[in-house]
Image (cartoon, rainbow, N blue to C red; front, side, top):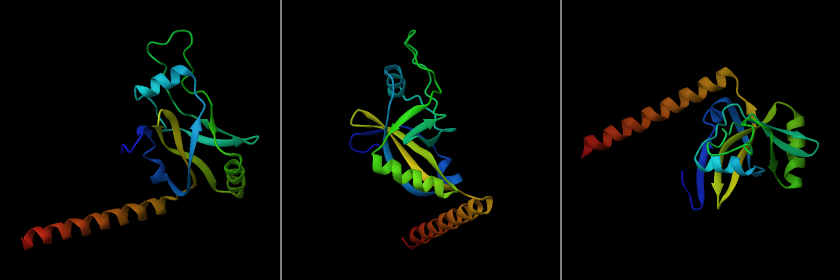
Length: 157
């Protein structure tokens, strides 16, 4: 998934399974030096991460960036709360939508975009178990259809 000037560091693979994605935003993230060095080595985990809006600012909580191995006393705390950088109108929109109810902010991926660390966050609604089962059944059915089409095409040759 390497696009022009975009190198993926970490993805939250369970997010699309557990949540119905409503809207996606790209946000910058305020980091300290050793965090960036650790990210350049490809170390990060979005598994338990989520975002909150507090006092007109968006904060990313639960993101795990391990300590930089060559770091000294200047190393960072691995699970500290980090500020997300968004435009004011985007933050105001998120405040309104998250207060509406049943919606949360979930990070989907973290990547370098032209040397800067960006986080793709999604406004999402949690899925029920039956929604997850329906999605899995639909995906399996589509997979079977494409397999059958492939078999028929190969049989015709």
